[in-house]
Image: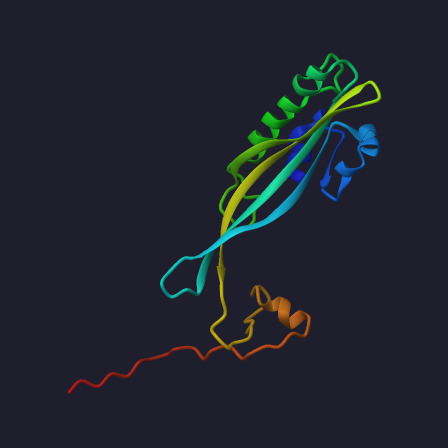
Amino acid sequence: MARLKDGLGRMVSSVGSYGGELEDVGAIARVLPACWVTFLGVQQTRPLSTHKQLFYTTGRFSVLLAACSVCKEAAQRKGGPARDEVGCNRLIQAVRRLMSRQDMGLHIEPLLPGRVRSLFSTRLNSDALAAYACEFDTVWVEEALDNGRWPAPEGDNDPDRLFADYQGRLDTPWPMHERTGLAYH
């Protein structure tokens, strides 16, 4: 959201996390143009190796954007004469430019641009209103626990520290493998 807020500047009046705003068209018309970010979920998980402890996980994010125009229907897509009538086409182009190949400092592969789809195009009183969704896919690696094991955090930066912080069941870490003894006959 911070990248979109900084990058889009005055093209939008607000950038936020999606919480159902598009369901009340009358309420959002006052804050348009605007965009919202949401996680659409995990799309696929597949093993990374034959050991099957590591998994490629594919996730999808969506940037929802909406714009309106007091002029005509074409202006809500292409933009109108007023500065706040940026138009959905230009917003889509700007969002895809800002978000493609970015990882936002997360442990994920950079975002890949996906589908752009129309959510709706309608009239509200005399204004033309449209909303679109720009989807982005990413991949990250998840590690499974050994069968029957519980999380065993080692240090404050361990991802399993979450379980210790919330008093979840824990195992002791595996002992360090220091040597292997081999005897040849």
